[in-house]
Length: 320
Ligand code: UDP
Image (cartoon, rainbow, N blue to C red; front, top):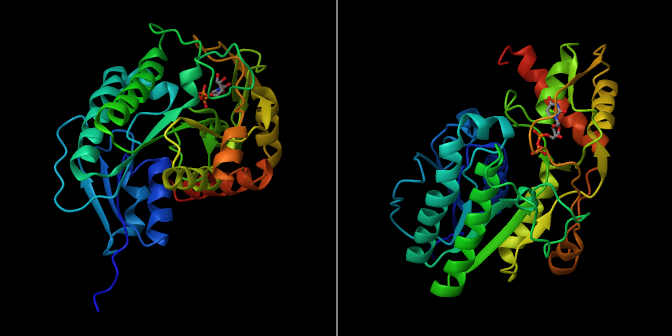
């Protein structure tokens, strides 16, 4: 009897931080995984351990261009996008293109293959929120022409496009709104708070807190997030679902925690707050609890320790 084949999953942006962890997770569940990535912010080092796995394939491709794939595809996870404020500043057009054209191409592939489509959206659709914590019903407070608008509006457009393919073409779709997530494989120099503070603390350099550090974020460990992604994809929920950790703290508290856990001599220095930096952010995850039976489990300290160990190793190997 022929061996039963597992499902075939495509991950756009699969060489990035989240995409590569998702690839590991799906391979462990007998999926065949095809990663598409143009490597502008992704890194082959995140997937090189998968080379040689017969159920894994990497294709260097810019998903804003037509995607041709032979054979069956069951699931498409659309994660391709620059994802840090510094990246959107440096790559504003690519950020808009991948959210708009890339989402269109990935949805077209889903329609052609009769595959289920999963959009990696973001808490940035809520902008600088006037509702706190943010529920999925909140429509957001986004500045369309500000520096972050290229990401926020691209993702808002991507959500609209996804719902249009769902309603008009009957494509099975899922939308996750991802809140701040951290863990190994974050890009060391992507400018986001977690790799920046850890890199600074490990080198005993000043920790650059923006503004007075009173703005808040809520940090979710990557393994919790990936579990939420999988459960959402396998659910029958076509409406957006927040996935994140509601444990909220100020950026200043976060800096102090990193200094403590890195056993660092770093001092804190204050830098100007970037334009449109959201003042507060915390997910309301009632829907994820009710619909997916999901909630985060990893507390901050062990999650950060794992992440710090990863960056320590990169520094020791002189990769960064
Ligand atoms: N931040 C900071 N210092 C840094 C980098 C970031 O104080 O060196 C702050 C930033 O202003 C924001 C928060 O940390 O309030 C989270 O920033 P990040 O770039 O990680 O992502 P965001 O949540 O803003 O998308």
